[in-house]
Length: 244
Image (cartoon, rainbow, N blue to C red):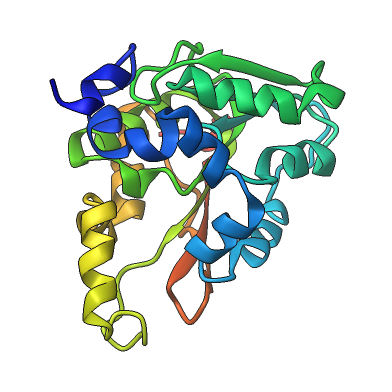
């Protein structure tokens, strides 16, 4: 039996097959949650990306925020420290939720954890004012991403926002792209990243919103980091009165 099958336990098949060693194996969870390791993986950009992401957090009193899947490092505690609002967080992996619970015990009354697949959320329609997606989409195959876009569009309220921190479209001029071993390793460990970098995220989000009777309020706000290697995107939705 292939080793990944030991980690299925209700998680998406692609997650167990390609990422068991990083997100499901207990020693992998222990190893990758070290801040130094995370910073190496993101080429020293973690703090910058976190700061830019938190700067876009919805600050309106009483806003409901959804963080789509757990994140290694200090993202979730920092998010809870930056807002007094309640934060909902879901993940398909029980081990990831257990790790996050240990990090957020001091504000457990404001951090609501649930085990869910991002492709099929158990929340009601228009439940959230903001959805945060931090380095998730590039780890999904195409169909899983489309399902996730649809669920995000469904649970977001008109006038709300979607905040996505991710890799940017590949730049052949970036010094990392010129290193052939790096391109090989990236394609090996992140098999869905090349396709994601060619995807028009704004178009996909717009289509998903339209299917749910909603629309974007103007063009997304995009901020780049690390010479265009990463990006922070904010998609604002039209309010109820201008809804399509």
